[in-house]
Image (spheres, rainbow, N blue to C red):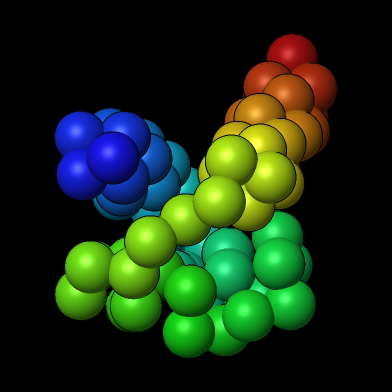
Length: 71
């Protein structure tokens, strides 16, 4: 379980580094309606698979939007 959350957090951190217009607070709010999500994840919050799916969906959608704008 810990590895699962570490991988998600690593992916979130990489996403935030690639998209400076999106803060950790904005990501949590937009993906889950929870402004504290990333901060709490950094401190060891556990995540349900459904929550991970929502966060990954938001990140994938935003990356797709960025790709379309750049093209």
